[in-house]
Amino acid sequence: IRTPIFEETSLFARGIGEETDIVSKEMYTFIDRGGTSITLKPEMTASVVRAFIEHSLGASVSLNKLFYISPMFRQERPQAGRLRQFHQFGAEALGSESTLLDAEMIQLPYFIFKELGLKHISVKINSLGEPEGRDKYKNVLKEFLSDKVHLLSQDSKKRFETNILRIFDSKDERDIAIIKDAPKLIDYLDDKSRENFELVKKVLEDTGIPYEVDPQLVRGLDYYTQTTFEIVSSKVGSQSALCGGGRYDFLVEELGGKPTPGVGFAS
Image (tube, rainbow, N blue to C red; front, top):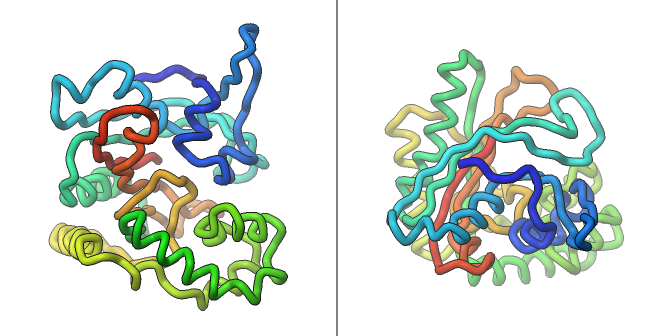
């Protein structure tokens, strides 16, 4: 699938989340001649879902498997491994709740990297569960941090009020030291989410993919539910993450489409 270089800004604000670093700090956003706010796309999933809805792709095929290679744009500080214009490849599967698809979306990039000859590759996985369980956990986390808020960075103080899970994304050493002892979201999963997560782990074990459970892996985007993952390597410089992704069962509905489960990755 190919989507435009830019989209209406509201797509990313709604899809990714206004309190994420991407939307709040990193997007290239402009007003066009018609007065519409447009943004150079910082990631692909929201664009794919917008096209999926607009062209009714779910009406003719129950399971859509799509891949892409596309330029992205983020106004980050340029450094080794991070450029303001960069290319990603990735895939999205829309239309199935099967947990086997979660595992497939980990297997696919893992074996691509192996074929490319990359060494020391491993997978970090976590489960964010369903929104109801996550809301309960947010209250537990807020209670844990309530007497430590004054020690958090300015960004994390704001996240404490607006989207507390984003604190796990912080790279500030003060925040990292505080949240390392925080309660684990994985301990608050409902039975269905726990079963799904165990199945993902079993498939990875059966296919010889090394992984570790990282309870603080929440990913930097608001649309994830259930499985989240990153593929990392210790041999690619300062930015160890090669790829990331997860399940997003409510994103299509949030962007105006019919309820459609989805899962994907980007590298």
